[in-house]
Every structure is written in structure tokens, then in C-alpha cells.
Amino acid sequence: MSEKSLVPSGKDKPKPNLSVWGDSDEVDAIKRRLQVMLPNGRQLTDDQLYAAAQYAKLTGLDPFSTGFYAMPKGGITLHYAALVAWAQDKGPYSDRYQPLTEDERIDHGVTDGETIAFKCYIMRDDRADVLGTYMRAGMPFNEALDFLAAKGIGIITKSDRTTRDGKKMDPPKGWTWERVAKKRALRDALKQSHGVPTAAELREYSRRVYQDTAEGRLEGLEQQAIEIIDRHSQMTDQERRAQFQNHVTIMRGEVESGIGDDIDGEFTDYHEEFAQHVIDTIPFYRNATHVISTAAGLGFERITEEVSELAYDELAKYAKQQADQGTE
Image (cartoon, rainbow, N blue to C red; front, side, top):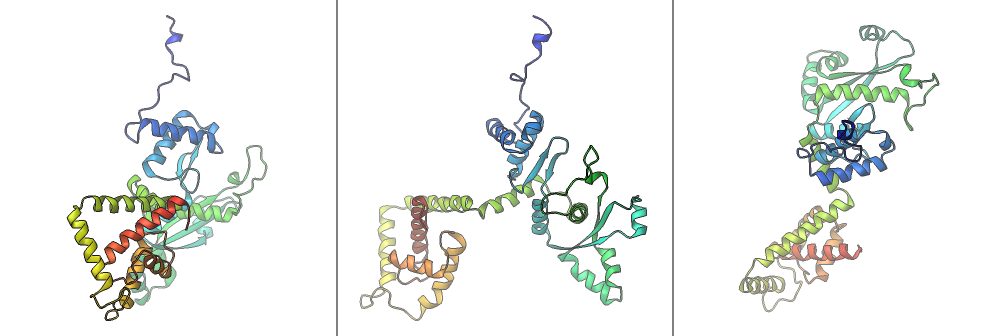
């Protein structure tokens, strides 16, 4: 056998070890999607595609939207929007931008007059009291800000705005070169004020973002229904009959009372709190009227604290039925 035949072909080339960052088949499927769907997917090497696929699996970020970039020569870069959202979630802040002064340009080696250079100040909300203390002590605002805030520098040179063949290059669509310089300054300042996001932090951020999507809300709704059905399946027949009788008594009141009769204003006082809880946890329901009218249609014409658990369960089941049918 020749030495050349021992070299694996591209088709037979072994895949990288994927055991650390996710299931091999799952990561491989993401890799194929990246290669086909990313604008520069065909320019990425297999190793770069696998790295991007594992990063997507590890963090939950969407490489096709505002998650991260995978660049042939730039590696993996967190998207600007994802970085800002993560930082605001970790520690809310205010930002402020100023062009570099002539002295600052010299200090940073910016001698070309065509270079765009900005400084970004990041003042976290949890340091605002300290800023106020310094100002009350007589320190001017700009001086106190310069002393307390994290600072970053963003520079766009002439070469950044020129193609390889020397032609003028436009900034990204919807942006100006000044804004790009500010974005770079913000990235630099956020490293000083918030650090670099860990995979666990990005994964938690992605989870919350996903929960706000239609797909995420439906998944949450389906999980709720599973939990409710599981809880009721564990009850004995005797417990179910006792619970049913108890809820009937609560709904009807005493023998002389009719369904829906108000008792000491409990319905008026409690139904808004109950409706808000349903709206917050079952995305199907749009407002309090939607909750209460649906509950009435399910037989719960009067909501009290005692009957609220059963009413909630039935509302969740009804919402899942409607979601399965594709209706509102």
C-alpha cells in the first residue's frame, strides 16, 4: 500500500471530537445548515463550521439572526445586539460618546486626520450613587464621569473604509462609519465594565429570549399541560371525586346559593389577581377579560382562591387545545 493511500480523503476525513460541546449528530446537522444558509458558509472550513456549530449548541445563540458571526478569517464574534442585551441584563448601564481630543488621538497613536476615533463611557446604574456623591462634593460632572466610568476606544482607519483595490467602501447597511467606531468603543468599554460573557451566561440569556418567541411560548404551554395531566394522573379515584365535590361546593356555595352568586365581594377582589397570574404564565391569554370569559365558559363563573387551582388547570388545558388547533 502506498504512503499516499494512507492519507484520508476529504470525504473520509475524521470529524473533530465533539463530545465536549454537544451530541455529534446534532452538531453535525447544525454544521450542514451553517454551510448552506450562512452568506459566507461556503468560505468557512470544516473546522470553522464545526466550531460555529458547537458554539451555537453550547450558548443557544442563533447564528442566522442576532446571535454571533462566523467569519472565515475573524473566527467567532458575538453579535453587537446580543452583547448589549447580555450586558444590560447583567448590569443596566448608560453610555456616552465623545470624539477623541487631539491630545487623546496622539496618546493612542492616531495621527491620520482621516481616522475616525471615539471614546465610550459606560456608567453602570449600580455606580450612579457614587457619581452623585462625587458631584455633591464639588467634582464637575465630566471629571467625575471620567474617574468612575469604564472607558473604551473605537477607531475606524482609512484602510477600514477602503477595499483591497483602493476603492471607497460603504459602511454596513443602515450605519455610518462614525456609528461603527462608536460600536467598537462600546465593545471595548463593556469589557472593562462587565467583562466577557461566559457560555453559561449566554445560554441563560438565549433561554429567556427563546421563551418570548411564539415557538417558545407554545413549548412552555405544552410543558404546563404535561405537568397538569401528570399531577392529576397521580391522584386516586377517591381523591378525584373528593376534589370534584369540593370544587362543586365552592362554585355553587351553600344549597340556597346559585352559581355565580357573589360572596362578600370575593369575586371582585380576587379575579383580577387570578387573571394576571394566568396572563403571566399562559401566553395564550391576552387580557383579563379573555381569562374571565374563558373561565366562565368552562364553568368557573366565580373565581375564588379555593377554586383557583382547578380553574387554572382547566384554562391551561383549554389553551393547549386551542394551540394544537392553531386558533386563538
